Length: 79
Image (cartoon, rainbow, N blue to C red; front, top):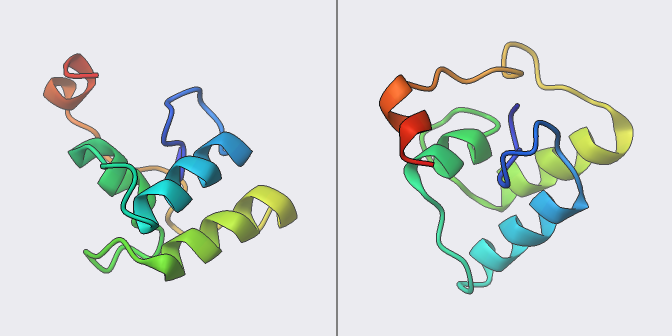
């Protein structure tokens, strides 16, 4: 699911905290986490994506056509 940075199948406060750590320079994102974090799918992971994740987590606002991200089998095997 979009924003699910710990791969537990849902977007939670844990994912938001990890993303905040990324914004603060404390955490690195894997290629898969970058795909899952790019909520507006503009090719960049920014604070705007974090804000959208916050909305999705707390208000059940899902960005149209962004609920799922294509993930290759190789990416899944590298988890």
